[in-house]
Length: 343
Image 1 (tube, helix red, strand yellow):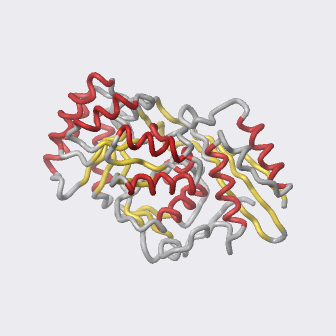
Image 2 (tube, rainbow, N blue to C red):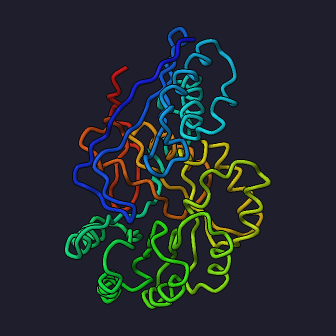
Image 3 (tube, rainbow, N blue to C red):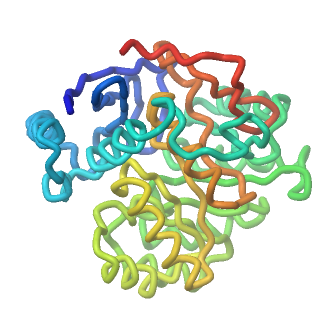
């Protein structure tokens, strides 16, 4: 088997704001496998500033992993502290063993018969820009939207939420918010109480990761269901995952396979969550359409009707052309469209 990797820098159509800063580019690495006439491709979706494997030796580790794959050796130990590479390897090997490089998890989604409901993502920006995004998403058919909050003035964010709710009650529109850890622990409960007036479905990561006792206290008293996101990153063993869920007792968890170490690692989180009656949904982590396709196909096998966070494929000017289409609040696979990956 021959294995190699190459880097692909995705350019945002416009700068996209989060509470951690403004994103203009997103790096990804593609692992390419060849064995006879078979080709496999996997995406290592590194997310600078958030992935635990955002380290200087990242490309060196990718080189070592590709050498091991070429020699058909196990790469688990090499990927132990590199979840995005582990994801890329898992994806590439499954791709290599599939009928086509892009059919990883066959289902009614991959045949185009059943779409996946998704939330419409509203990026941070000026008040007017965020408001414009919200109503464009609603006009486009989304009945679930997610707003990134925490960087603007909180009162302005509440004004926007009040404006949305005045037009669209909770039975018409589901609102999720994502604070990306922006709230201080001593102010978080007060802010959640204010947000509760707007019938918020859930809030992702209200306080920064690494504060389990503070998160546990907040989850016990919150008027809005809390979804853990960044808190899951870097938690590897089943014992540690179970301990985190038992300590914090969150209402939801958010699964980003590129940040958690792949599909098998994400499925272990799902099993543990369901044993504790904790809800979950899947979110992409700004992968190209290569990674998004794999995540969406995997998600389609999980038998969930909850809106997923899989609508990021249209953010970039230079994404890989694919059959993935977002319309009327769903992600669907259009088999009349072709992949245009340059092998």
